[in-house]
Length: 464
Image (tube, rainbow, N blue to C red):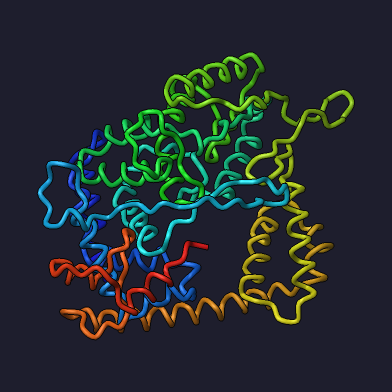
Protein backbone atom coordinates (compact mmCIF):
# COMPACT_ATOMS: atom_id res chain seq x y z
CA UNK A 1 0.00 0.00 0.00
CA UNK A 2 2.82 2.42 0.91
CA UNK A 3 4.53 1.74 -2.40
CA UNK A 4 1.31 2.52 -4.27
CA UNK A 5 0.84 5.83 -2.44
CA UNK A 6 4.48 6.80 -3.05
CA UNK A 7 4.16 5.96 -6.74
CA UNK A 8 1.04 8.14 -6.94
CA UNK A 9 2.85 11.11 -5.38
CA UNK A 10 5.76 10.75 -7.81
CA UNK A 11 3.34 10.87 -10.75
CA UNK A 12 1.75 14.07 -9.44
CA UNK A 13 5.15 15.73 -8.99
CA UNK A 14 6.20 14.67 -12.49
CA UNK A 15 3.04 16.16 -14.00
CA UNK A 16 3.57 19.46 -12.17
CA UNK A 17 7.21 19.70 -13.26
CA UNK A 18 6.20 19.23 -16.88
CA UNK A 19 3.42 21.79 -16.72
CA UNK A 20 5.40 24.45 -14.84
CA UNK A 21 3.40 27.15 -13.06
CA UNK A 22 0.52 27.47 -15.50
CA UNK A 23 -1.98 24.64 -15.05
CA UNK A 24 -1.91 20.92 -14.42
CA UNK A 25 -3.56 17.99 -16.20
CA UNK A 26 -3.73 14.24 -15.58
CA UNK A 27 -4.42 14.28 -11.84
CA UNK A 28 -7.56 12.20 -11.59
CA UNK A 29 -6.57 8.71 -12.76
CA UNK A 30 -3.34 8.45 -10.71
CA UNK A 31 -5.23 9.15 -7.47
CA UNK A 32 -7.38 6.03 -8.02
CA UNK A 33 -4.47 3.65 -7.49
CA UNK A 34 -5.48 1.03 -4.95
CA UNK A 35 -2.60 1.70 -2.53
CA UNK A 36 -3.29 5.42 -2.48
CA UNK A 37 -7.02 4.98 -1.81
CA UNK A 38 -6.38 2.47 0.98
CA UNK A 39 -3.89 4.82 2.61
CA UNK A 40 -6.49 7.60 2.68
CA UNK A 41 -8.90 5.33 4.58
CA UNK A 42 -6.32 5.22 7.37
CA UNK A 43 -5.46 8.91 7.09
CA UNK A 44 -9.10 9.95 7.36
CA UNK A 45 -9.52 7.65 10.40
CA UNK A 46 -6.93 9.42 12.54
CA UNK A 47 -8.33 10.19 15.96
CA UNK A 48 -11.41 8.02 15.50
CA UNK A 49 -10.16 4.55 14.56
CA UNK A 50 -11.76 3.08 17.71
CA UNK A 51 -15.22 4.33 16.78
CA UNK A 52 -17.40 1.29 15.94
CA UNK A 53 -18.36 2.36 12.41
CA UNK A 54 -14.78 3.31 11.54
CA UNK A 55 -13.28 0.19 13.13
CA UNK A 56 -15.69 -1.98 11.13
CA UNK A 57 -14.46 -0.46 7.87
CA UNK A 58 -10.78 -0.68 8.85
CA UNK A 59 -11.16 -4.32 9.82
CA UNK A 60 -8.71 -6.19 7.55
CA UNK A 61 -11.50 -8.57 6.54
CA UNK A 62 -13.56 -5.63 5.26
CA UNK A 63 -11.32 -2.80 4.12
CA UNK A 64 -10.52 -4.18 0.66
CA UNK A 65 -14.22 -4.20 -0.18
CA UNK A 66 -14.59 -0.58 0.94
CA UNK A 67 -11.51 0.47 -1.02
CA UNK A 68 -12.92 -1.16 -4.15
CA UNK A 69 -16.27 0.60 -3.64
CA UNK A 70 -14.60 4.02 -3.44
CA UNK A 71 -12.46 3.28 -6.50
CA UNK A 72 -15.59 2.22 -8.39
CA UNK A 73 -17.50 5.33 -7.32
CA UNK A 74 -14.68 7.69 -8.31
CA UNK A 75 -14.04 5.79 -11.55
CA UNK A 76 -17.66 6.46 -12.52
CA UNK A 77 -17.55 10.13 -11.49
CA UNK A 78 -17.12 12.39 -14.50
CA UNK A 79 -18.66 15.45 -16.15
CA UNK A 80 -21.13 15.12 -19.00
CA UNK A 81 -19.55 13.89 -22.21
CA UNK A 82 -17.24 11.38 -20.53
CA UNK A 83 -17.84 7.71 -21.20
CA UNK A 84 -17.86 5.84 -17.88
CA UNK A 85 -19.12 2.26 -17.32
CA UNK A 86 -21.81 2.97 -14.69
CA UNK A 87 -22.59 6.66 -14.24
CA UNK A 88 -25.38 5.78 -11.78
CA UNK A 89 -22.70 4.54 -9.36
CA UNK A 90 -20.80 7.83 -9.33
CA UNK A 91 -19.80 9.40 -6.03
CA UNK A 92 -22.17 12.09 -4.78
CA UNK A 93 -21.81 14.42 -1.79
CA UNK A 94 -24.03 13.77 1.21
CA UNK A 95 -26.48 16.32 2.58
CA UNK A 96 -25.65 17.28 6.16
CA UNK A 97 -27.44 19.00 8.98
CA UNK A 98 -25.57 21.78 10.73
CA UNK A 99 -24.44 21.39 14.33
CA UNK A 100 -23.95 24.45 16.52
CA UNK A 101 -20.93 24.44 18.83
CA UNK A 102 -19.66 26.96 21.37
CA UNK A 103 -16.00 27.47 20.56
CA UNK A 104 -13.25 28.15 23.07
CA UNK A 105 -13.40 30.15 26.25
CA UNK A 106 -15.39 32.90 24.54
CA UNK A 107 -18.14 30.35 23.75
CA UNK A 108 -18.52 31.85 20.29
CA UNK A 109 -21.32 30.04 18.45
CA UNK A 110 -20.31 28.37 15.19
CA UNK A 111 -22.31 26.18 12.81
CA UNK A 112 -20.30 23.22 11.53
CA UNK A 113 -21.12 20.33 9.22
CA UNK A 114 -19.88 16.82 9.92
CA UNK A 115 -19.09 14.73 6.82
CA UNK A 116 -19.44 10.96 7.07
CA UNK A 117 -16.36 8.80 7.32
CA UNK A 118 -17.75 6.41 4.73
CA UNK A 119 -16.98 7.65 2.29
CA UNK A 120 -17.07 11.41 2.19
CA UNK A 121 -14.11 12.07 4.49
CA UNK A 122 -12.07 9.48 2.61
CA UNK A 123 -12.88 11.10 -0.75
CA UNK A 124 -11.95 14.53 0.64
CA UNK A 125 -8.54 13.23 1.69
CA UNK A 126 -8.01 11.56 -1.70
CA UNK A 127 -8.82 14.76 -3.59
CA UNK A 128 -6.71 17.04 -1.37
CA UNK A 129 -3.78 14.64 -1.64
CA UNK A 130 -4.02 14.70 -5.43
CA UNK A 131 -4.13 18.51 -5.48
CA UNK A 132 -1.64 19.05 -2.65
CA UNK A 133 1.30 20.17 -4.80
CA UNK A 134 -0.95 22.55 -6.74
CA UNK A 135 -2.36 24.07 -3.56
CA UNK A 136 1.13 24.52 -2.14
CA UNK A 137 2.89 25.70 -5.30
CA UNK A 138 1.79 29.34 -5.14
CA UNK A 139 1.29 29.45 -1.37
CA UNK A 140 2.65 32.58 0.30
CA UNK A 141 5.52 31.83 2.69
CA UNK A 142 3.72 33.32 5.69
CA UNK A 143 0.24 31.96 5.00
CA UNK A 144 -0.32 30.02 8.22
CA UNK A 145 -3.10 27.92 9.68
CA UNK A 146 -4.33 24.63 8.19
CA UNK A 147 -1.08 24.37 6.19
CA UNK A 148 1.33 21.53 7.04
CA UNK A 149 4.23 22.71 9.22
CA UNK A 150 2.85 26.26 9.26
CA UNK A 151 0.85 26.48 12.44
CA UNK A 152 0.71 29.18 15.09
CA UNK A 153 4.23 28.42 16.38
CA UNK A 154 5.64 28.82 12.86
CA UNK A 155 4.03 32.25 12.52
CA UNK A 156 5.07 33.24 16.03
CA UNK A 157 8.73 32.56 15.27
CA UNK A 158 8.76 34.99 12.35
CA UNK A 159 6.76 37.72 14.06
CA UNK A 160 9.24 37.65 16.95
CA UNK A 161 12.10 37.82 14.46
CA UNK A 162 10.63 40.86 12.69
CA UNK A 163 10.02 42.67 15.98
CA UNK A 164 13.54 41.94 17.20
CA UNK A 165 15.54 42.63 14.05
CA UNK A 166 13.53 45.25 12.13
CA UNK A 167 12.03 47.65 14.64
CA UNK A 168 11.84 50.50 12.11
CA UNK A 169 9.36 48.61 9.95
CA UNK A 170 7.39 47.31 12.96
CA UNK A 171 6.40 50.63 14.55
CA UNK A 172 2.76 50.38 13.50
CA UNK A 173 0.45 47.44 12.91
CA UNK A 174 -2.56 46.98 10.64
CA UNK A 175 -4.74 44.15 11.95
CA UNK A 176 -7.82 42.99 10.02
CA UNK A 177 -9.92 39.99 9.11
CA UNK A 178 -12.60 38.99 6.62
CA UNK A 179 -16.25 39.20 7.59
CA UNK A 180 -17.88 35.73 7.84
CA UNK A 181 -15.13 34.35 5.63
CA UNK A 182 -16.06 30.68 5.21
CA UNK A 183 -19.77 31.44 4.93
CA UNK A 184 -19.06 34.09 2.27
CA UNK A 185 -16.74 32.23 -0.11
CA UNK A 186 -18.15 32.77 -3.60
CA UNK A 187 -18.37 29.44 -5.45
CA UNK A 188 -17.99 31.07 -8.85
CA UNK A 189 -14.80 32.90 -7.86
CA UNK A 190 -13.30 29.77 -6.31
CA UNK A 191 -14.14 27.59 -9.33
CA UNK A 192 -12.68 30.15 -11.72
CA UNK A 193 -9.39 30.20 -9.80
CA UNK A 194 -9.28 26.39 -9.70
CA UNK A 195 -9.85 26.22 -13.45
CA UNK A 196 -6.82 28.47 -14.02
CA UNK A 197 -4.57 26.05 -12.17
CA UNK A 198 -6.10 22.66 -13.02
CA UNK A 199 -6.86 21.45 -16.56
CA UNK A 200 -7.99 17.96 -15.60
CA UNK A 201 -11.75 18.13 -16.27
CA UNK A 202 -12.57 15.18 -14.04
CA UNK A 203 -10.64 16.65 -11.12
CA UNK A 204 -12.41 19.97 -11.59
CA UNK A 205 -15.72 18.10 -11.73
CA UNK A 206 -15.26 16.37 -8.37
CA UNK A 207 -13.97 19.59 -6.81
CA UNK A 208 -17.09 21.32 -8.09
CA UNK A 209 -19.24 18.54 -6.61
CA UNK A 210 -17.61 19.08 -3.22
CA UNK A 211 -17.95 22.87 -3.45
CA UNK A 212 -21.56 22.84 -4.67
CA UNK A 213 -22.61 20.12 -2.25
CA UNK A 214 -21.27 22.18 0.63
CA UNK A 215 -23.18 25.42 0.23
CA UNK A 216 -25.89 24.15 -2.10
CA UNK A 217 -27.09 20.65 -1.13
CA UNK A 218 -29.90 20.76 -3.66
CA UNK A 219 -27.37 21.09 -6.45
CA UNK A 220 -29.09 24.13 -7.97
CA UNK A 221 -27.16 25.88 -10.71
CA UNK A 222 -26.85 29.32 -9.15
CA UNK A 223 -23.93 31.66 -9.69
CA UNK A 224 -24.41 33.48 -6.38
CA UNK A 225 -24.22 30.41 -4.14
CA UNK A 226 -21.74 30.97 -1.34
CA UNK A 227 -20.11 29.20 1.56
CA UNK A 228 -17.63 26.51 2.52
CA UNK A 229 -18.64 24.47 5.56
CA UNK A 230 -16.64 24.57 8.76
CA UNK A 231 -15.74 20.98 9.57
CA UNK A 232 -14.79 19.87 6.05
CA UNK A 233 -11.16 18.88 5.45
CA UNK A 234 -11.42 20.40 1.97
CA UNK A 235 -12.66 23.80 3.17
CA UNK A 236 -9.43 24.95 4.79
CA UNK A 237 -7.41 23.96 1.71
CA UNK A 238 -9.77 25.59 -0.78
CA UNK A 239 -10.02 28.76 1.30
CA UNK A 240 -6.24 29.15 1.59
CA UNK A 241 -5.86 28.37 -2.11
CA UNK A 242 -8.43 31.01 -3.08
CA UNK A 243 -6.68 33.74 -1.08
CA UNK A 244 -3.30 33.25 -2.77
CA UNK A 245 -3.85 36.29 -5.07
CA UNK A 246 -4.56 38.43 -1.99
CA UNK A 247 -1.25 37.46 -0.40
CA UNK A 248 0.69 38.28 -3.56
CA UNK A 249 -1.20 41.56 -3.98
CA UNK A 250 -0.29 42.70 -0.46
CA UNK A 251 3.37 41.70 -0.79
CA UNK A 252 4.09 42.54 -4.42
CA UNK A 253 1.69 45.36 -5.33
CA UNK A 254 1.32 47.12 -1.97
CA UNK A 255 4.92 46.26 -1.08
CA UNK A 256 4.25 45.33 2.54
CA UNK A 257 7.61 44.69 4.23
CA UNK A 258 6.23 42.27 6.84
CA UNK A 259 2.86 40.59 6.31
CA UNK A 260 1.39 37.40 7.76
CA UNK A 261 -2.01 35.71 7.35
CA UNK A 262 -3.54 33.10 9.62
CA UNK A 263 -6.54 31.84 7.60
CA UNK A 264 -8.69 35.01 7.34
CA UNK A 265 -6.84 37.02 10.02
CA UNK A 266 -4.18 39.33 8.60
CA UNK A 267 -1.43 41.48 10.11
CA UNK A 268 0.75 44.01 8.27
CA UNK A 269 3.66 45.81 9.94
CA UNK A 270 4.70 49.27 8.77
CA UNK A 271 6.68 52.37 9.68
CA UNK A 272 3.84 54.93 9.58
CA UNK A 273 0.08 55.13 10.03
CA UNK A 274 -0.75 56.77 6.71
CA UNK A 275 0.88 54.00 4.73
CA UNK A 276 -1.07 51.33 6.64
CA UNK A 277 -4.36 53.22 6.28
CA UNK A 278 -3.84 53.35 2.50
CA UNK A 279 -3.10 49.62 2.51
CA UNK A 280 -6.29 48.92 4.43
CA UNK A 281 -8.38 50.76 1.87
CA UNK A 282 -6.66 48.99 -1.03
CA UNK A 283 -7.04 45.56 0.58
CA UNK A 284 -10.73 46.17 1.32
CA UNK A 285 -11.32 47.11 -2.34
CA UNK A 286 -9.34 44.09 -3.57
CA UNK A 287 -11.38 41.74 -1.38
CA UNK A 288 -14.63 43.22 -2.69
CA UNK A 289 -13.69 43.39 -6.37
CA UNK A 290 -11.76 40.13 -6.68
CA UNK A 291 -13.52 37.81 -4.22
CA UNK A 292 -16.88 39.42 -3.37
CA UNK A 293 -15.73 39.44 0.26
CA UNK A 294 -15.98 42.19 2.87
CA UNK A 295 -13.41 43.24 5.42
CA UNK A 296 -14.77 43.20 8.96
CA UNK A 297 -15.39 46.67 10.33
CA UNK A 298 -13.24 46.24 13.43
CA UNK A 299 -9.89 46.59 11.61
CA UNK A 300 -7.24 48.51 13.53
CA UNK A 301 -4.10 50.54 12.92
CA UNK A 302 -2.14 51.11 16.12
CA UNK A 303 1.30 51.91 17.49
CA UNK A 304 3.11 48.78 18.55
CA UNK A 305 4.50 48.60 22.06
CA UNK A 306 7.67 50.64 22.65
CA UNK A 307 9.67 52.25 25.47
CA UNK A 308 9.67 56.05 25.54
CA UNK A 309 13.26 57.28 25.74
CA UNK A 310 12.66 60.27 27.99
CA UNK A 311 10.49 58.64 30.64
CA UNK A 312 11.33 54.95 30.21
CA UNK A 313 7.61 54.17 30.24
CA UNK A 314 6.11 51.43 28.08
CA UNK A 315 3.64 52.87 25.59
CA UNK A 316 1.68 51.57 22.61
CA UNK A 317 -0.08 48.20 22.49
CA UNK A 318 0.96 44.56 22.22
CA UNK A 319 -0.23 42.48 19.25
CA UNK A 320 -2.88 39.85 20.04
CA UNK A 321 -2.66 37.27 17.23
CA UNK A 322 -2.86 33.48 16.77
CA UNK A 323 -3.45 32.91 20.49
CA UNK A 324 -0.35 34.85 21.52
CA UNK A 325 0.21 38.32 22.92
CA UNK A 326 3.34 39.79 21.33
CA UNK A 327 5.22 42.42 23.33
CA UNK A 328 8.40 44.24 22.38
CA UNK A 329 10.59 42.00 24.53
CA UNK A 330 8.49 38.90 25.24
CA UNK A 331 5.58 36.76 24.07
CA UNK A 332 2.89 35.47 26.42
CA UNK A 333 -0.30 33.47 26.05
CA UNK A 334 -3.59 35.12 25.32
CA UNK A 335 -5.52 35.45 28.59
CA UNK A 336 -8.44 33.34 27.33
CA UNK A 337 -6.08 30.42 26.56
CA UNK A 338 -4.48 30.76 30.00
CA UNK A 339 -7.94 30.54 31.55
CA UNK A 340 -8.90 27.53 29.44
CA UNK A 341 -5.67 25.74 30.39
CA UNK A 342 -6.18 26.43 34.10
CA UNK A 343 -9.74 25.11 34.02
CA UNK A 344 -8.72 21.94 32.19
CA UNK A 345 -5.88 21.25 34.62
CA UNK A 346 -8.17 21.73 37.61
CA UNK A 347 -10.80 19.36 36.19
CA UNK A 348 -8.28 16.64 35.35
CA UNK A 349 -6.51 16.89 38.72
CA UNK A 350 -9.75 15.88 40.45
CA UNK A 351 -10.12 12.65 38.42
CA UNK A 352 -9.12 9.25 39.75
CA UNK A 353 -8.20 8.03 36.27
CA UNK A 354 -6.66 10.28 33.64
CA UNK A 355 -7.65 9.29 30.10
CA UNK A 356 -5.62 9.59 26.94
CA UNK A 357 -7.95 12.40 25.83
CA UNK A 358 -7.27 14.35 29.06
CA UNK A 359 -3.52 13.84 28.71
CA UNK A 360 -3.39 15.05 25.09
CA UNK A 361 -5.54 18.09 25.91
CA UNK A 362 -3.20 19.26 28.67
CA UNK A 363 -0.06 18.48 26.67
CA UNK A 364 -1.39 20.58 23.80
CA UNK A 365 -1.46 23.53 26.18
CA UNK A 366 2.08 22.66 27.24
CA UNK A 367 3.13 23.32 23.65
CA UNK A 368 1.94 26.91 24.05
CA UNK A 369 3.54 27.25 27.48
CA UNK A 370 6.96 26.02 26.35
CA UNK A 371 6.97 28.39 23.36
CA UNK A 372 6.11 31.52 25.35
CA UNK A 373 7.41 33.48 28.32
CA UNK A 374 4.86 32.00 30.71
CA UNK A 375 6.97 29.74 32.91
CA UNK A 376 5.65 31.43 36.04
CA UNK A 377 2.14 30.50 35.00
CA UNK A 378 3.25 26.88 34.57
CA UNK A 379 4.77 26.85 38.07
CA UNK A 380 1.66 28.37 39.64
CA UNK A 381 -1.24 26.84 37.70
CA UNK A 382 -0.05 23.56 36.16
CA UNK A 383 2.87 21.91 37.95
CA UNK A 384 1.21 21.68 41.41
CA UNK A 385 -1.83 19.88 39.97
CA UNK A 386 -0.66 17.41 37.28
CA UNK A 387 2.40 15.30 36.56
CA UNK A 388 3.51 16.13 33.02
CA UNK A 389 5.81 13.09 32.79
CA UNK A 390 2.89 10.83 33.68
CA UNK A 391 0.75 12.48 31.00
CA UNK A 392 3.46 11.87 28.40
CA UNK A 393 3.63 8.18 29.38
CA UNK A 394 -0.15 7.85 28.97
CA UNK A 395 0.02 9.36 25.48
CA UNK A 396 3.07 7.28 24.54
CA UNK A 397 1.45 3.99 25.60
CA UNK A 398 -1.74 4.84 23.74
CA UNK A 399 0.20 5.75 20.59
CA UNK A 400 2.15 2.49 20.69
CA UNK A 401 -1.06 0.48 21.11
CA UNK A 402 -2.72 2.26 18.22
CA UNK A 403 0.35 1.87 16.02
CA UNK A 404 0.47 -1.84 16.78
CA UNK A 405 -3.23 -2.22 15.93
CA UNK A 406 -2.75 -0.29 12.71
CA UNK A 407 0.26 -2.39 11.73
CA UNK A 408 -1.66 -5.61 12.38
CA UNK A 409 -4.62 -4.34 10.36
CA UNK A 410 -2.33 -3.40 7.49
CA UNK A 411 -0.60 -6.78 7.48
CA UNK A 412 -3.91 -8.64 7.45
CA UNK A 413 -5.26 -6.26 4.84
CA UNK A 414 -2.29 -6.94 2.56
CA UNK A 415 -2.80 -10.69 2.93
CA UNK A 416 -6.50 -10.36 2.18
CA UNK A 417 -5.81 -8.14 -0.80
CA UNK A 418 -3.78 -10.70 -2.76
CA UNK A 419 -6.53 -11.16 -5.30
CA UNK A 420 -10.29 -11.19 -4.86
CA UNK A 421 -11.40 -10.23 -1.38
CA UNK A 422 -13.54 -13.17 -0.42
CA UNK A 423 -15.20 -13.99 2.86
CA UNK A 424 -16.04 -10.38 3.71
CA UNK A 425 -18.64 -10.25 6.45
CA UNK A 426 -19.39 -6.54 6.27
CA UNK A 427 -21.17 -5.02 3.28
CA UNK A 428 -20.04 -1.57 2.20
CA UNK A 429 -22.57 1.21 1.80
CA UNK A 430 -21.86 4.13 -0.48
CA UNK A 431 -22.64 7.78 0.26
CA UNK A 432 -25.56 7.58 -2.13
CA UNK A 433 -27.04 4.64 -0.21
CA UNK A 434 -26.09 1.89 -2.68
CA UNK A 435 -24.34 -1.09 -1.11
CA UNK A 436 -21.65 -3.24 -2.70
CA UNK A 437 -24.11 -6.15 -2.65
CA UNK A 438 -26.63 -4.08 -4.59
CA UNK A 439 -23.91 -3.17 -7.10
CA UNK A 440 -23.49 -6.84 -7.89
CA UNK A 441 -27.18 -7.67 -8.04
CA UNK A 442 -28.63 -4.39 -9.33
CA UNK A 443 -29.22 -5.78 -12.83
CA UNK A 444 -31.56 -8.41 -11.34
CA UNK A 445 -34.00 -5.79 -10.08
CA UNK A 446 -33.17 -6.17 -6.37
CA UNK A 447 -34.82 -3.44 -4.32
CA UNK A 448 -34.33 -4.46 -0.66
CA UNK A 449 -31.27 -4.64 1.56
CA UNK A 450 -30.22 -7.56 3.69
CA UNK A 451 -29.30 -7.51 7.36
CA UNK A 452 -25.59 -6.87 6.85
CA UNK A 453 -26.39 -3.89 4.60
CA UNK A 454 -28.65 -2.38 7.27
CA UNK A 455 -25.98 -2.90 9.92
CA UNK A 456 -23.41 -1.13 7.75
CA UNK A 457 -25.74 1.79 7.11
CA UNK A 458 -26.59 2.06 10.79
CA UNK A 459 -22.93 2.22 11.71
CA UNK A 460 -22.16 5.07 9.34
CA UNK A 461 -22.18 7.95 11.79
CA UNK A 462 -20.99 11.48 11.25
CA UNK A 463 -17.51 12.57 12.14
CA UNK A 464 -16.89 13.60 15.73
